[in-house]
Length: 138
Image (tube, rainbow, N blue to C red; front, side, top):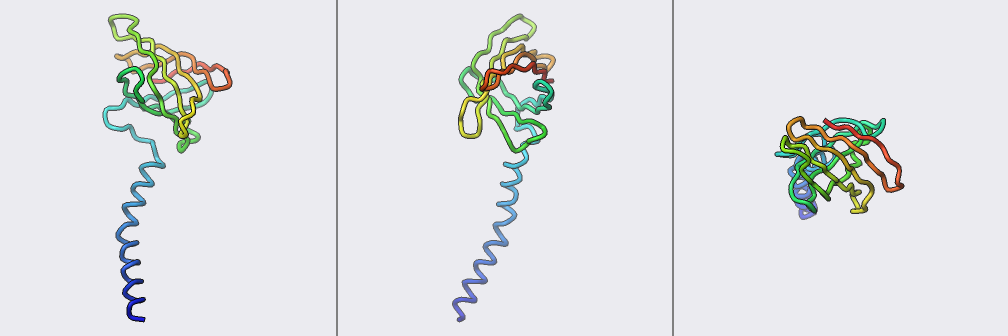
């Protein structure tokens, strides 16, 4: 009986000590509302839908950020840079981003003009069904 009490006490102590760590990790993962370090935060709309995007343009082929619909903040889509071509010397670029679900399925494409100096990205978003929407993020 004494061993059961000791084991029970050790289990309770471990749960109490680890629960704040687990809760903090779950909160970080479930609330993607803050920009990761060195990522640009853009807010705007895809068609009539409000979105929040976190972006850091690197090399073509790299995962460069994520976004989510404001109404559904736990449904996060990853973004991979497919194309980035300078349009003029003032920092305007043609940027194509592919969207991926949490399971890695390609589910849409952003194709638009990115203004480096004005923190502005606008163009056309095409979803996996081929439906097109205008998007503006700043």
